[in-house]
Length: 155
Image (cartoon, rainbow, N blue to C red; front, side):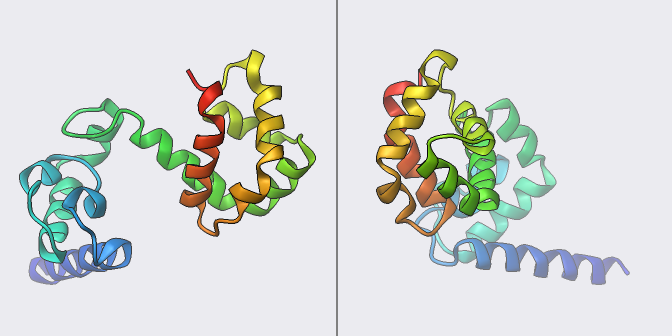
C-alpha cells in the first residue's frame, strides 16, 4: 500500500512538472518557490524540478509563498491570483476593457493595486491599449501587458 501510494505521488509530481515546464531554464521557473527550490537552486532539468516540486509540496511551499520567505517573491501569490482571474474571465474582460467599464475590470484594476483616485484614468489607458493587451492569447501574457500599461498607476 505504501509503495503504491509513493508511486502514485511520484507519478503525479512528474506529470505536474512535465506539464508545467519540461524545458524550464531554472528550477525556480518550474517548481515555484519554497524549500525544494532553495535546495536545488542552481540545478536545471526535469529531475531537479521534480525533486524541488516534491520537496516544496511536502515542506509547505504555499506557506513559504504566503509569508514571503524561502526565496519567494513578495507578490507571488497575488500574481497567481491575477493570472487565474484573467484566465477565467478573459472574454468578459476583453469586452469590458473595450467598453471602459465593468465589474470584472474594476476588480482586476483593484487587484493590480491601482489607487481608487486613479482607477478611472487607469481604465481609460487600458481601453486605449486593448488591442496590444489582448493580442496575447495566454492569461499570463495578458497580465504582463496589463502590468506594463498600469505601471504609472501602481504605487
